[in-house]
Length: 327
Image (cartoon, rainbow, N blue to C red; front, top):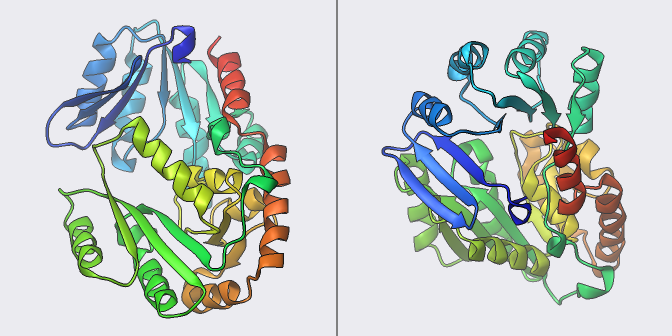
């Protein structure tokens, strides 16, 4: 988009003070303390399109009120990312999606969200999270090593089931045939994140790579891409999203996802993933990994190769769909 003359701002709130980071020519990340600060930026920003991605639940009425009262010429779009687990939440999803747009569209990140909102008469559009083309690996370009290379990519908090990952990786590090590595975003202002960062920094069982939450750079993207290219299995016990980007990146990289039967992951991966029960993650993960030999890994990679191309979430395809929406 930037190459075609677009300018993109990512507006994030929840920071202590305003921070502006130019991550790439034409792409700027602006951290702000509150949602009201974000609204103030929008009012001053002369934006053509505003795509609401995620908001705190308690602050969504505030954003809806802003959209309904706004006199800005911008078109307001919204993204549906998470599956409603109860009827009241489904009703709220319908209402919120309708009220959060003005002159725009509802963008769904998964097929089941798209079908749900279509049945509600919302006329949504399906756009999965985009994965750059250089993440997609050919079957002949990924070797089978002597040891299984296993990686976790994510955040340091209990919400992401990091305790399950630590238990699994500590166990595997004491077994032959496994090489675990943990790459995690560390937020120095968060007490829980600091706790896990301290534990991981002081252990010697497996490799730990810490990524500061605010130190984004193109080099970080390259590092994540290389990690997934080298890994055989991605351990991702939990996600709040229907189409987690890291799962899509893993599939494109022919890195077998080891995850749980939650959200839209089974539909996303099809049969080409190791699916453990959320409440029995550790024993089932150990069982699944212990039975993964070179022949099975090749078969699963072949399935991931075809599945990732059928879903059509490469950057160029997603970009075209987004252009169709934005006009």
